[in-house]
Image (cartoon, rainbow, N blue to C red):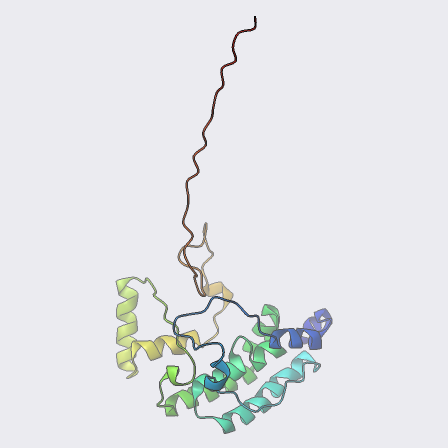
Length: 214
């Protein structure tokens, strides 16, 4: 599979650099810091740029090499996660396509990286918002599923919040994901911005009666 994926990758360095670039937007969450102060608040680690020219089968070791460097620099799991597994992190830059990500998630290197995240979460007593703004999602779920989560969290001596984050950190196989039927419901992720007001437009038809021809 690695050879097949390597054959499809035309320019890994270009993809890697593209992932490193951040798009800017005027919309932001209320909890986000002022853009002028964001760099001062966000903790960044001094780790090497990934070598995106490596063959696919060697990139997992590159991930672990950089993960060891990040692990030694911070005790905050949120910072470690952002630098390694975040949307603009090392892993996404080395595996820019969903197909490549699935390849990495099936590897022992991914499992080792997840163990590092779990170890840091066990030792990190700080709150998540100490290193970056937090987000909140509201999930509708059946009572029976909520009861199961509550029992599982009690058995593992965890809060439901920590249990759910642990589950979200794991990969999920596509065969366990239901097929979306119809339009996707609910709010789209990301800043919503001001709501657009629908203005009804009234069309007035004026009929001018012509005088009869003489």
